[in-house]
Amino acid sequence: MKKLRLGVLASGRGSNLQAIMDRCQAGSLVAEVVVVISDKPAAYALERARRAGIAAYGLEMAAFPSKREYEQAVVELLREAGVQLLCLAGYMRLVGEPLLQAFPNKIMNIHPALLPSFPGLHGQRDALQYGVKISGCTVHFIDEGMDTGPIILQAAVPVLGDDTEETLAARILEQEHRLYPEAIQLYAEGRLEVEGRRVYIK
Ligand code: GAR
Image 1 (spheres, rainbow, N blue to C red):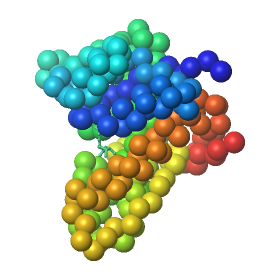
Image 2 (image 1 turned 135 degrees about the vertical axis):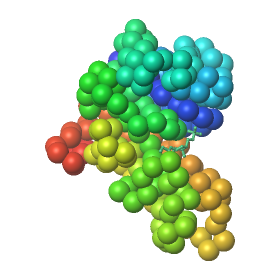
Image 3 (image 1 turned 180 degrees about the horizontal axis):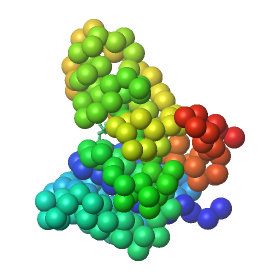
Image 4 (image 1 turned 90 degrees about the vertical axis):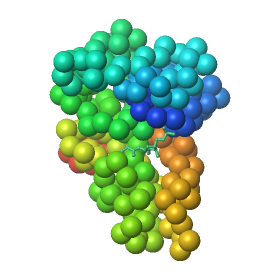
């Protein structure tokens, strides 16, 4: 099986990126990360990529006249690298038209809550504040909405009485690191079929 070429967009520390790279290295994910791009030039995710010998670019949106032009530059880098699937890993921006058009049904995201509950930037905090007893994470395809695309996989974790945002986030993160590579591997094997809102695993 030929390795799936992955591009990763990340805004922060990049632990999900690391989990994906590690699984590629181990061979349990038949893919390779070929480029990592961040909207935050100081993001540790870029450092992780460089250490692994992967092309890494920090593109500050403020350096571009508009979000459209920023995304066009991102698309160009992804195309140059021959990216087949784009993975958002802690990318804290809404994806716009240039990226969606360049990668139709080819952008995945991981979100730290059981969607459609608690979309947005603070999935763990919002779940805790709401008082749910179970939360978790969701891997989904990206559409034009905020965390609204078709759901691929979900994993649940308990919310404990003495949880803080940090302890809950850590429990969820453990599942994220397992779930995201699993979803990418299903894609690499051509086993994901999207019909409307539903993703069937063949
Ligand atoms: C992860 O928990 C991810 O689910 C979340 O940001 C964190 C990034 O961690 N993403 C979102 O909240 C997207 N709305 P990482 O940089 O260590 O992978």
